[in-house]
Image (cartoon, rainbow, N blue to C red):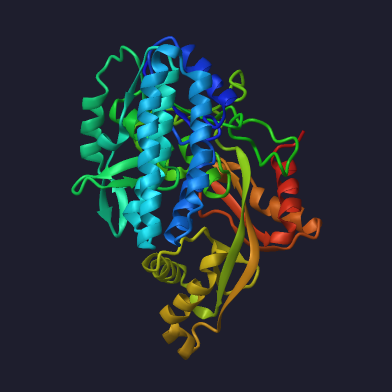
Amino acid sequence: MLKVLKFGGTSVGTIDSLRNVKNIVESLESPAIVVVSALGGLTDRLIATAKSASEGKEDYVDEMKIIRKRHYDIIEALIPDDRRDGVLSIVNSLLDMLEERYKGLTLIRILPERTLAEVVSFGERMSSVIVAGMLENATHHDSLGIIKTEKWFNRNIADRALTDSLIREEFKLPLMRHAVAGGFISTDKDTGEITNLGRGGSDYTAALIAAALDADLLEIWTDVDGFLTADPRVIGDAAIIPEMSFIESMELCSFGAKVIYPPTIYPVFHKNIPIKILNTFNPAAPGTYISDNVPDKGKPRGVSSLNNTSMITMCGPLTSNVAEINSRAYNAMARNGISVFLVAQPSVEKSFSIAMPQMDGEKALKQLRLEFSPEIQNGELTAIDKTDDLSVIAVVGEGIKQVKKLGPDIVKELQGASVDVKAISDGASDTTIAVVVSSAKVKEGLTLIHSLCFPK
């Protein structure tokens, strides 16, 4: 059975957590591919130091002492004597290169995108070398030579065909030893410059490798026991979700559950390779198993929420033409890079609402007024207004339409507790029912909806 295991920053953040990683990997029955993030918190530190250096400040000297000591302490504690010098040599070389980049930034007083990408890459380049040296019977593989990107609308995206080919060439099957690679980091296929895969990049690296090799399972090791029916910081009795579908996991994360970043799992989703979410700090926990073959469809699986939301409501006769107004509103948002959380039916008749991140609210309002200016002039739209400080609460479960009257019951429950429902999206999706409420009422709303969907 071929497994790909991804360990995030918290999992490789300390000596104790790395010992857990070592025990987990070395307890496997057969060799696996291990993808690791940078040491917990290091990426943010690398970025902050780069920005400071580009302003001409020389505090990078003290920062480098802290970064060096952290890596040296881990190497001293975890790398066996016969491998320590080799690991130290590589890590020292990378640390020296990093310090040189910082020194250069203090001289040029600017921070080019490609330099920042290189600076950030040192985190995974060092952590992967350390983890490979820590494990018995493991080899290190440089992701910079395997994961290739290309420019697409000024973004770096993975060149799937080339990357798949390089992955299959790099990791010869069957594996004879554990193979360790850094997540997140990549290089441009044309220039060879260091790039990265962006937010959720380490998950994406692991998914790319799993998909290219037709792995049997992708394990994502993090600092939670798996997906829960709600945020445990809000709902104290939230329970682990033992099984869920790919679509359910993506919907929950899209609406605020920060377990995985949805785009990163597309490669394994398309190959129907299951994912298991597990806790590095509690490896005995069963975790959450994500696949396409999930029992008990047609019931709520989890509840999540998105804060810092704006909702724009359009009123007037034109809103009765749902197809036209929906299409034009979505296209206007897409052309301007604005993500739309949901289309909702507000309480006001002859109206249409869309919700988006609050930081994009003013821009969205301007674009919609521009898009529909003829209709505003001729009276087909009487108003386009924005409301801020809102939250979206989503109930997710494949086949949720089969749950009779769930949408109306949610509204009734909230309104009975004086939680005003600004809008509801009920029926547009077979997987999600969402309501928009004031951010001041989101915790109360989550508690009420969770109790309704998961009665004790």
